[in-house]
Picture 1 (cartoon, rainbow, N blue to C red):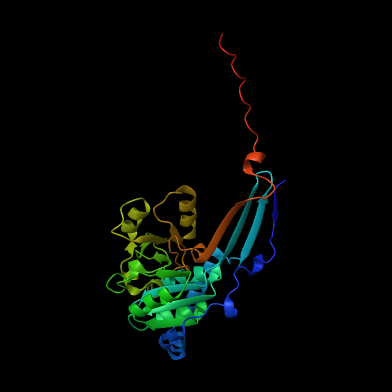
Picture 2 (tube, one colour):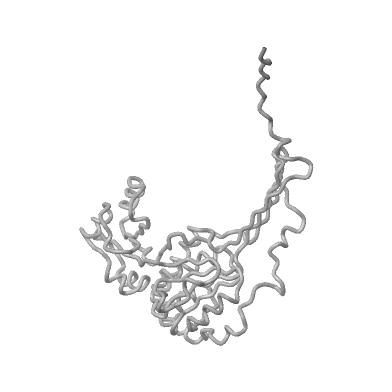
Length: 318
């Protein structure tokens, strides 16, 4: 029977020198001070802060936390193979966004997968200006202490300095704002489209919360009534966007059960307006994996495979 065991010392494979990864010292010149963060927290009404907390809790319930570090050594004696696999968080997660960002929902959806993946250092990087209060209060509630405001050229320098980093670029960091965006090293996820909310029903949508969580432009551009219903029923989208709908719970249940291949993947009930998911951005993006394959010393694959019987030789021709 095939066996699975843990090799000695495997638990130390992810050990970092000097106690763990560190940001470069020069980056401290761009750190956002505590004063604006505290002011943003105090200046945000309590019910809006509570909505962000709800969204953060939904992320944790949806994705869950990932084991910090794992290592498996699997041996397959009958097949003659050995497979060793390691899985751990990337040491650095960099979430970059323009200074115009005013969406706690989209920022939280970029930060939480990194946090839940166990990345030792998760940083928020505002390029081209100072972060808005909506950004700062989200960082406070998510527990992200490392926030920096810096020019795009210094952000590029940072990605060059860090090994095995994961980079998230939120919408608005086009070539004009980040000329080197297509040349950044490491793995990169880009937000290429903005949310489009569909409000087809006369539900108790919290318009204030929708505008706060996703930005005033997003709320103003939401489709309502028949226009929203047409998209839900499979109609065309009005340009590049990511549609999401706010519906009553019974309507959500019907759509989930009856329309498995619907064009709208994110359905939210009232009270969840501050939640968002970035397609394809999960904790897995922020993990480092390695797989190694070898032959066992005592067996070779051809020795463990049953050879097909050879047909009998034909008698020699007379």
